[in-house]
Image 1: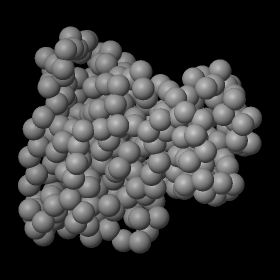
Image 2: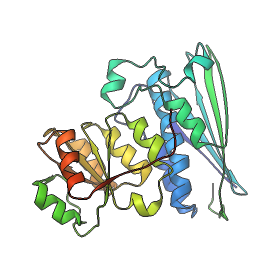
Image 3: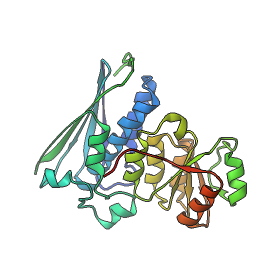
Length: 147
Length: 126
């Protein structure tokens, strides 16, 4: 079993992607295939960017056991007002600065849903939790690395 | 074609120090919105990704981070835009090559296509 957490800082575009980069490095060290890393890290990066853009800051918790990868993103609010609307392709509340950084197309959450095997999104004004599960395809995952 | 031939034929300027000039390039993908790249290329095979360049007008850290997540190791910046030192340093640390061209995204892509560089196909619509 491997369990690690990485911090995500709000509104800091220079550091955005750092947590997903660490997730990628960890998955590589554990011998996960490149194809699966691409799938997991694409979802992770989109979710991390959402925390950077929309929240007051948060963290990601990665948990690996028996060929199952779980990525749980937590932030400190202000929350998503309408989850159904937020899940609609093209709907975005991103600012011009977010667009200048290459994000805010309104595709993030639906992208995450496509990449992951299970996605649970809950939100209130106190914070948002995004739980993602990936069942590794055709893999025998070595989780002997110390957490 | 090799990356070296691509650099010569299109007068691309290399902004990072890596030497991967013999790398084979057969595919290209253009975008300024990184979700487009993530959505389509997360399912592209490793074999194709290894021969792919990401063409973008985005010169922030996020174009490099996107390439990193997708395992793409060549990013071509169009319209002569100049990335910051921080972006170049990040790319070098991640072993991603940044190339630059004064051409627009359309012109570069058209010329690459004429030379046989193919687009990435996908089976999703949104």
